[in-house]
Figure (cartoon, chains in turn purple, blue):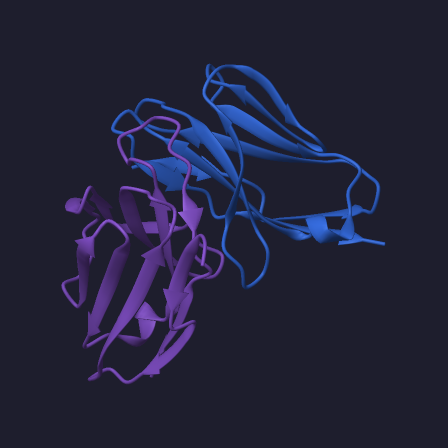
Length: 115
Length: 109
């Protein structure tokens, strides 16, 4: 496989459930990102990992918990979510988040619905 | 915070030209990106501008004026497959990337 792969593509969960989103990149990149995309709104950066170290947490509620075990894998653990958390969650990777010409490669996203 | 503005929607005819404007106000500047996102798919990189001027890539061109905080994406010889959302994104002095809400372009036959 090539590029950035996200699973599951669709997820429906109740507010008391615990679930995880998975992202895997096969590009040899060193930086990985989680973005939230809601309809008609700008992409919101959630977390950044560069060389497995978390370099950014954009004031994300603690019900979202990221995990980056290595440079190729990124998880987003979900717990006690709210209906307003329903959105498309995009994973991205890049060579190095500190570079100026830092082109992101995105996955197709995980569509999350919280009931 | 960062402020990036682009039109919400644009419609054009197949074969025509469409220009998508993006204005920004950020704390410092380290580059401007354009991404294309088809419905239900991943955003894909189109162009990067860090110096003033025009960058041309086939049917797509991107222009930047740093003094005006302004960029545009020009799509020429429009094709039906160009119907998509186009995202403007700006990197600030801290290398943080902020996105606009996207412009949905509809190409009609």
